[in-house]
Structures are given as structure tokens and as C-alpha cells.
Amino acid sequence: MELSSIPTDAQLMALAAEVAAEVLQHRLMLVTAESCTGGWVAKTLTDLEGSSAWFHAGVVTYSYEAKEALLGVNPHTLEQTGAVSEETVLEMVSGALARLGAGVAVAVTGIAGPSGGTADKPVGTVWIGWKRRGGYAHAQVFRFSGDREAVRRQTVAAALKGLRKTLTE
Image (cartoon, rainbow, N blue to C red; front, top):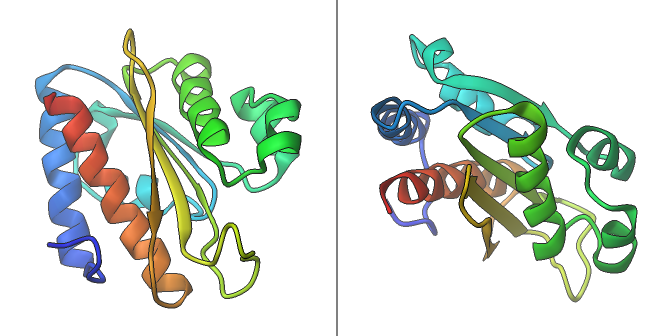
């Protein structure tokens, strides 16, 4: 499945099952920190039977205040770079891992639309970050197309693919 295509529920579940197998193999617990997906990554993962064996927690942080209070994102970072930035998603994923006490984390922040985009950050701009305990956080920017649901579906797929890659490298 290419990221440019809109993933179906079945495709998202297949990706989630691959992530679950890797998390279990590595004997880790997983956490999510989400903004534009509103918990869809966590929902997809916890739709799997037995997810309590490897899924620890998920947090949805839309506001600056929630990102600061729940994930430890620095207010200066948000003021200087905005919520949709590499710096913010790296702080989100690191904060989720540290504060929620797991072995691997994913964080997403972006502009799903239909409004909210700018010339610098158009609708469909999404930053996703991944981190394993003891490793370095890494992030990638995506430019997804389509309506709000299409952007969010593509974000969930990219988050899961990145988790799988983080766990297998």
C-alpha cells in the first residue's frame, strides 16, 4: 500500500497487527500521543484482541496547554515553531515515552483540514515522530491530500508503518 492511497479499515488493521507482533516480539509496551488523528492510532491498535498485553496508553492533546501539561512540550517550542513542527512532535514523542513509561512511542501532529492551513503549512501537513526507549527520537513530515478523513487515514497508516520500521531497525 502506498502512502498516497487512502487506506481502508482492513489495511489499517493489517498494519496494526504487524506492529503488535513486533511490539510483542520485543517485549515492549507502546504509547501514542496524538493531535490531528484524535486517538485514531490508539483506536486502531486497541481494536486488536489482546492489545492490553502490549498497549500501555494513548493521549490526545489538541491544545498547546494539553501538549505542555500532559507531554511536557516546552511552551517556547510551541510559540516559536507552532504545534505542527518537527520540534514539537519530537518533544511530544519523547514526553509520551518518558511520562507514560513505555518502551516505544509514536506522536502525530498536523493539519487535517478542511481549514487551518497556511502557505507554510497547508492542510495535509503532518509531522509524525517515533522513539524507542534508550534511542533517539526521529520525525518525518508528510503532505497528504484529500479531505479530513483521507488525511487522518493516511496519517494513521504512516504512523503504523513508522512504528514497524522503528521496531525492526
